Amino acid sequence: MSIITEAAEFDYGKTPRGGGLWPFWRKSYADADPLPELKCEVSRPDHEFDDGDELPDEYRLLLGKMLRHEGERAGNKSFLGLMGVCAEIAEVFIPAEYRLVKAEYIAEELKHAIMFHRIAVGFQTDFALQDVPYAHYAFHLPRESWADDALFHFFVDLNGAFHARDWRESSYVPLRKIAHTIERDELGHSEMGYFFLGEILGTARGRRLVQALLPKWYAAALDMFGRSDSPNTPKFIQWGLKAISNAEIRAAYKEYVDRKLGALGLDLPDERHGRRFL
Amino acid sequence: MTQTTQRHENEILAEARKAYAEFGIELAEAATYGVYMRLRCARCGATVGSMGDRVLPGLVPALLADNFDLYAAGLLGCRCGYQAERARALDPARAQKANAGA
Image 1 (spheres, rainbow over the protein chains, first blue to last red):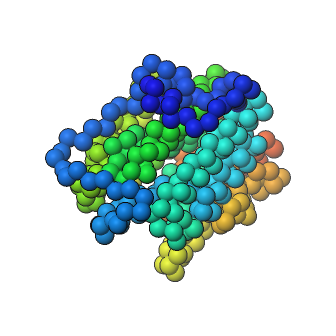
Image 2 (cartoon, rainbow over the protein chains, first blue to last red; image 1 turned 60 degrees about the vertical axis):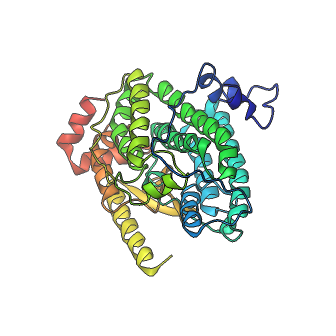
Image 3 (spheres, rainbow over the protein chains, first blue to last red; image 1 turned 90 degrees about the horizontal axis):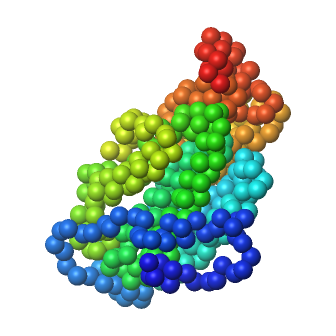
């Protein structure tokens, strides 16, 4: 796991972060890769493009789509707004002893905003300044409790970790370079949500609340990987921007979250209940 | 944003506003650039959550129907108890059952 620890870009320092809990990824990567390998099994050309290279039209279009979905950019006002909402949610719902943990989360997402800003400028300067609200409804679901917030982070940040895992072999060099850091951090954010879930489940009322809210987030999380029959998927794979299909990455994700939720003693929702994008 | 998209989003927000009003929750001012909005208790004005403006049509009413028991049992909603009161007013029998399981 040296590649993960080497990806650290700064020292966390001697002062314990988030009450000593941060970063959550450290424990997850201590023994092995926590996420499954997402290996491309189809034959495809060997492409590689770097910052400043002339990009083929279709490649530019697909990469642009991908970067628009990845909203963590300094120039994306909506993303900065989402961070403001996260800070406010921490004030309203999260016990005081864990607010510094949430602050570490926000700090790390803002670090990503710098990283993706630089990628955006290299890709297309005017894109770097565009406000692109998250299109997927998972980012817009109501959050009315600490349990909602914990489920949001467990599921939604984990989606980001899986996509970053996929970028380890990306044909776009700038994405490949940041893949390890983003994957590691997003996995840590998901583990923060998982830790919070464990705390909430410590009471009978908390368990009832989490179990009741789980179907809402489970369905949205599985929907986040898009339609299984998306016509763009083979193009993404052929250009080396993705390694596997939407259905394959969703299945790998589902296996991971089902195992984690089972370990918390939660009943798994029906995987087709409430789904909008099969 | 196109006019069609704008109208679509306004309709979704109107639907969400109506569904939340049933439970005594106001879809209040935009917290950030018009994308994310605070949810406030309609009685005391306390913040009880947030939501974004790109939820899908029909989603918020369906979620709130699913959350009925949580409001009734006080697992969701304001500390002042207004949402639990609203749930009892909407369906006393179901609210009583939800509280029995609390």
